[in-house]
Length: 139
Image (cartoon, rainbow, N blue to C red):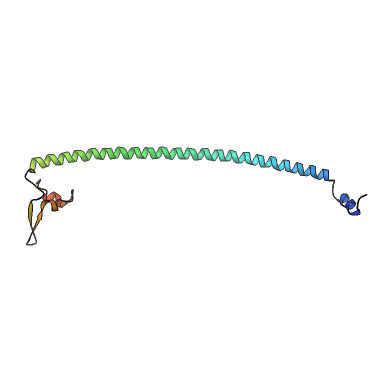
């Protein structure tokens, strides 16, 4: 004995078995579509990862090449600097006696009519400057 509302419900709706079969078929088709999408996404990610790795490797090679160029240039500059230092010492020994020069020597400078006295070490304190070149005693 069934209540009256269940008879009308059964008449309007298909049986539960057919609904469950349709739902199962729909689930399996959506699962297969999702599986295909995930396989496609994995393939796409693998390709993107390979491109990224190739770009990274290219950048690393470029970086190594630039570092090598800079190292070579630095070595070239150091060689030139050592040659210039040798020439500087050679000229200094040929044209100026530096044996009797001391940092404690008192040098008198006429600056605009005023006589200023300063120690040679003070005037030559900063190496490579014009003051050091003028008062170092090599010339």
